[in-house]
Amino acid sequence: MTAPLFKGVITALITPLRDGKVDEAAFTGLLERQISAGVHGVVPMGTTGESASLHLDEHKRVVELCVQVAAGRIRVIAGAGSSATDKAIELARHAKTVGADGALIVTPYYNRPSQEGLARHFEAVAEAVQLPVLLYNVPGRTGVDLANDTVARLAAHPNIVGIKDATGDLARVSWMRANIARQFDLISGDDPSYLGYHAQGGVGVISVTSNVAPEAMVALHEAAAAGDYATARDWQDRLIGLHKALFLDNSPSPTKYALSRLQLCGEEVRLPLAPTSNAVKPAIDRAMADAGLG
Image (tube, rainbow, N blue to C red):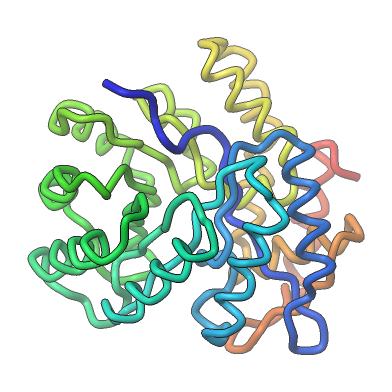
């Protein structure tokens, strides 16, 4: 098999906001911090980027800015998912036009398509644009689960190169390795279970935690990739509290709170999200301290 196209630590970037608008200066600073920390890629305008509540022109601008700032130093996988197939195609085409390395396409949310509808949705996007596509399965947010057999069907398409699996079901990675013959990038979308996912054959993680602790996530991944699971477990033990704390309130609000404590951006989110509750901030503070972040 060929080498994975996408692997390593890929940060699911937040979108910093100031006074209701995208804070481009803060976004640029956050991205430069990620690159300096050694991450292998980023996802602008995924779930963590508040893609569901940003306007279409804002979405496109963030992707374009990300590609410009990254300037080929790391992979940029543009979030391009939508409940409407035509809109997903539009976003994927835009990602291709501005120079992104791939598109992350989430299962359509709320309208709950059948497995046949899901397959046709992803196939339509993959046919419409010559850009590597990562499937994104996150049933806890979308209300629909992309079945293993459907993933295997989609893996036959040359433009569909892998999956971000945020189910937390570690048996899936082994099933996919056994049932997908070609190179297919198996990427975790769940920070707490990433170490186990990697041990069973995963090649990377699209991470929320790496917004806050990019160096530590890179160290965890590199130890695991080298087969040094003792060191990887040490990093996991240090980060497990942060993995959990960043989801104690509606994501990405806790991540923005943590980054505000590091003076990297403000806490502002866009409705219907609300800033992190004061009740959970002490737990986030403790998790940051445990991770060596102040």
